[in-house]
Length: 81
Image (cartoon, rainbow, N blue to C red):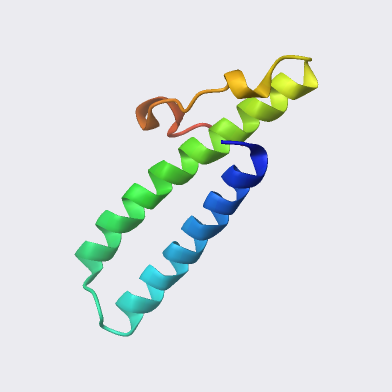
C-alpha cells in the first residue's frame, strides 16, 4: 500500500467511526455492538498510522518505503504520538 492508499483507508475508517456513532445515537445499533466495532476500527487505524509513519521514516532516511510492513495490532496499540 502506498501513502495515498493508506491515507484513503484512514479516511474511510474515520468515516465508518462517525457512522457507527450516529447509528448508536439513533438507536440503529446497541452500544455493545458499537464498542466491538469501534475497538476493531481503532486497532486497524493504529496499524495504518504505524505503517504510514514507517513509510515516511524509510523515505526520510533513503530507504525503500515499500519495505514497510503492517505490524500486529498488539505491537502498535498504545504507541504515543
